[in-house]
Image (cartoon, rainbow, N blue to C red; front, side):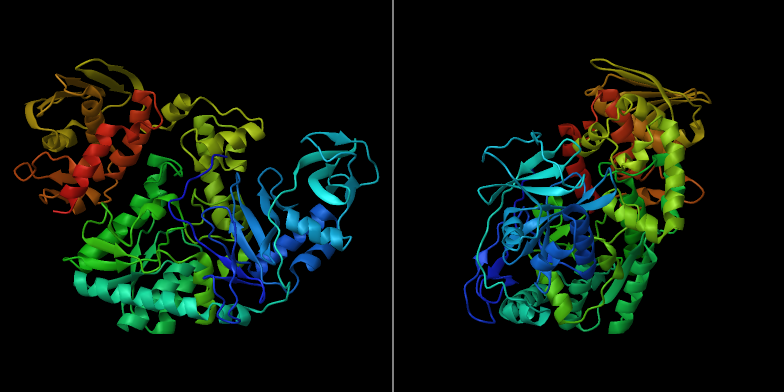
Length: 640
């Protein structure tokens, strides 16, 4: 998998005397100076929860043959897990200041596995607690097989040379097959057992400092912005900490829960328990059935095709804000830099283009996951039980950003919800003629031929259908043919169009110069547009035919497929759009700025990521420079 580059990384230290992790290099408990852990970026390690340890024990028993290695390595020791790079879920397991091994979810066998690192191998060797094979040389190659019988097939074997661990192998019917070299740093600590209370004592000073800085940030920001303070509560650990900090600083802030309609019951219950604990007022931005109503139009969401966030989160939240706070708000959210590359690039204060009247801020941007959990334990915050069931993140139960390991938990714990989703996926799989692995391996989690999707397919020896065939089958309004020339473009949709709706929407592109029952002609500032009832779309005299046919397609899709999400009405700078049974555009108010085309989910996701990708023969056509420049302009206009 390609290596991701993080702008910021979380730093964690380890006290060699107390044998506990530190948020700062100096231990508050004994005063010793800790050494920095070298973890996979962004290094956002967290405490291993009871479920993690249970899964770890089971994986060790299966891969190493008994539970003895687990007890030797982890029993009574404070253990961390840190996300590592893998096709699905992988975690570095840190104990005694070193990475003892890797816990990972095998997407093909659908189970957790364990792989020793050097520190863990040395410890088990010293206790004679791992099966070994002594190699004749220290030079081994992956795939090489040593004829050696007596090992149970499938068992992980530690390959040594002169008593030193050099590689990992697996027992096969032919012998021990070399898997990979044993690597990793090894450090010395007291190896003491440590309790949670001792870990909290070791981090007392730095936790106090983090809280003081966060509260100071909240105080200064709220004073400077001068807007009502609203805390977004998701049911996750980060938003819970943000709320607790806000309660300390402001007393009784308003709380908003974004109910996407896809939350697991445990999340909704956690939100309710949290607000009851503080005695706060809760407002709900309820998406209702928006996801299921839009699903037949958009198809399954993907990591690279997030139409669901617009419909189920941003638009409901924007409606709530407009209803209760017409002059805007300061929204406090539990966002951290180490959650994603996008959030790592974000500052502590920002404005989302889809929420123009909302200024968002996070007091925990620099907090690591370890800091969040230690604060949670210290202050006895309400914790979502999903964390101790195998969930790394809290959100929609079928979110495409989820790992297969998490989706398996959903399937096991809430089969009714999961079966409903799989039933839809199966119908869509048949529609696009995808292999069965499209569902089984979670290939539906990407629209494009992303590296993760292709890697899984290759490992499973599955050949996905050509992406253009998939896109063509995916489109709600079939695209029969297209033609792009130097100053003109032409597209034929395989459907009859509602010309009455298009006539009213035409002002978005320019002046309607010809209108009949069967055709329309629109004169814009940079092109002339023609729409025919039979689905034929033409652009002439265009400065940029790709951009102009793009807007014409968006206008048609938006008028024919409108879901009445109200995004266009919410962000129109001239307030020229109203929505009743259909979308109405005030011809006198509209100034053809086309913000409505850029903020409509149908245009932003469906048109750009399916139709334009197909026309440009580029799955990432939506990233083209001219579109990015216009998106910046739209963000500015949307704030007016």
